[in-house]
Length: 161
Figure 1: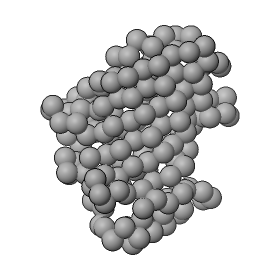
Figure 2 (figure 1 turned 90 degrees about the vertical axis):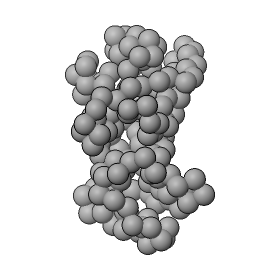
Figure 3 (figure 1 turned 120 degrees about the vertical axis):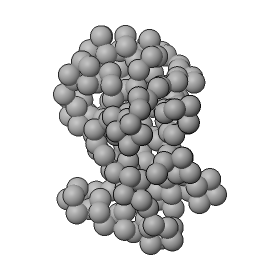
Figure 4 (figure 1 turned 135 degrees about the horizontal axis):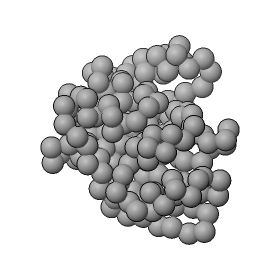
């Protein structure tokens, strides 16, 4: 079950979460809702929710001339909480940011924050997969008014209170 997010962001995202709960016949916890709609960094939210640092494990990373594709697991206290895939158009992103991404040690949100890169996050879709008991979202990070990152995140609900 998925819903798209458009229009007046505050009202629309609330409406879409309500629609998601109704269509999927679920009741999301407040922490789940926050993770679905936050437009800061997931790592920071997870650290606060679990009162513990997040580790990022890059499972796969493919680099070519203008694009980086990567797959990561965000983990807290040895629990896998988020599976994320990212496509990054590196043509206009500062070289220091690209170098940190290629190094594969930090999450995208942390890299962007460390470099004080001016960006905007736009949620494209949120959803719930009842067969796997996960919620997911797709969002884009705009840099220079253009989408340069497209991130898909799956949240393992059994391990997130």
